[in-house]
Length: 337
Image 1 (tube, rainbow, N blue to C red):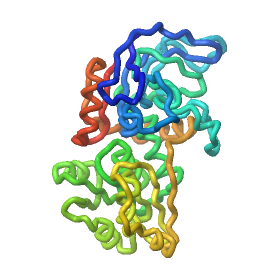
Image 2: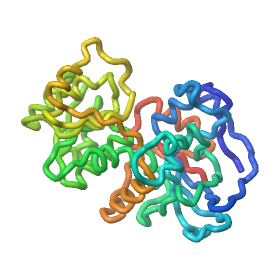
Image 3: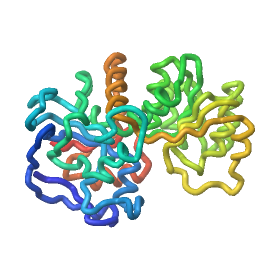
């Protein structure tokens, strides 16, 4: 089989297309012929060696993938050849709360990922693909989709009539808009592009802000929502945290996910967060049970992920470069087979 491999933190140009034997599934394992993968910002950090000594090499990168069962190992009754499946981001986090042991097996980081023609998964880490989704659409679910689900639904507990603020037009943010609208919430969405803002409105955003022309977007979001938003899906990190704190109501939640916006400002408003009794909730994907719950909701509502652009397998480097450019709206996909 062919797969991409990183020998070290050498960036996009260090991605090498190599030949390896097709793995054989052992007891309780499933061999999946991967059909599609999608990129997350985390994958870009990984390729550049941003996780330091915690990162293993050589490494098959990318965590989000979907495919078809090719063969099952002994003792597997849950799946059969031809079943369409997606693999969980954390293979050993089946359910319950997080722990060091459960979160040790992150695909495309601590363990080989899905930028390959075949991969073996433990049977407990697979979930059936919703029938209404293509393999490319399904490949958006394991990391980006589930992170947004955890932020908005599982940990955010968003209810009808509440207000959610999202940042930018990456995969997590667009999923967050879709899940918020699914449960009857209002959405404030930000972007630096007026053209992208028009697309955010089409996706269901009720109020939009261009953070380039309105750098005080947190204040404006608070004013629009009267008392502040109930939940911010914070993908910018400490670089945008000040405005997120300004946007959030007293007693509200900031779901802290990303690191896109760079270093913290010198006047970080943590005292305001304390005075307003806001909750800063870290979010790191979720369990296999969470993935199944999200897939069930997506199936029931007929929801479809937003795919920006699809690249061929031999164009994987171009896919990474396109994501790095920031020009995408939704998920950047790679068709494997």
